[in-house]
Length: 203
Image (cartoon, rainbow, N blue to C red; front, top):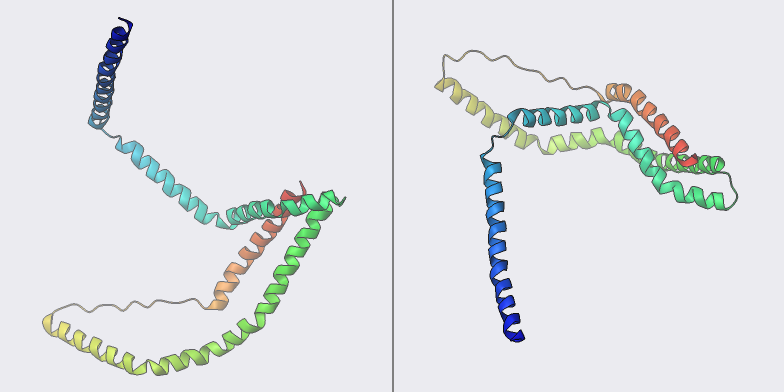
C-alpha cells in the first residue's frame, strides 16, 4: 500500500510540474505581449540621445583637463607599489613620490633626447623624398589629369547651359601655426598631470 501511495504521489508531481511550467510560460508570454503593445516613449529616447551627445561633446571640449586626470590616476595605480616599497625602506612617502616623479621625468626626457636626432634628420630628408615621389608619380598624375580633362569636356558637351561653378580653395595651416596653437595647451596638460600624479602618489 505504501509503495502504491508513493507511486501515486510521484505521478501527481510529474503531472503538476508540466502544468506549472505551462502556467509560467503563459504568464511570461502574456507579459512580453503587454510590454510590446505599450507605446514607446519617443521623448525619453530623444532625451537620452541628446544627453549622450552632450556628454561626448563635453568630454571632447574638456579633453585637455580630463585626459591628464585619467593618465594621473592610471599612473598612480602603476607607481603606487614602488612608493610603498620605498616607505617600507623607511623613506617618507612625500620624498619617495618626488623621487619617482623625478625619475619618470628624467626617463621621458632621455627618451625624447635620444629620439630627437633621428626625427630631425627625417624632417630634413622629407622634402627631398617627397620630391622624388612626385617625380616617380608624375606620369600617372599626367594621365589622370588628361582623363579628368576629357571627362570634363564630355560633361560640358552634355550640359552646355550649366552655370559656372565657383572654385573652393581649402587652406591648410602650416605646422608652425599648429604647434603655436597647441603647445600652450600641451604644457598646461603636462603640468596638471605632474601635479595630480604627485599628490595621488604622496597621499
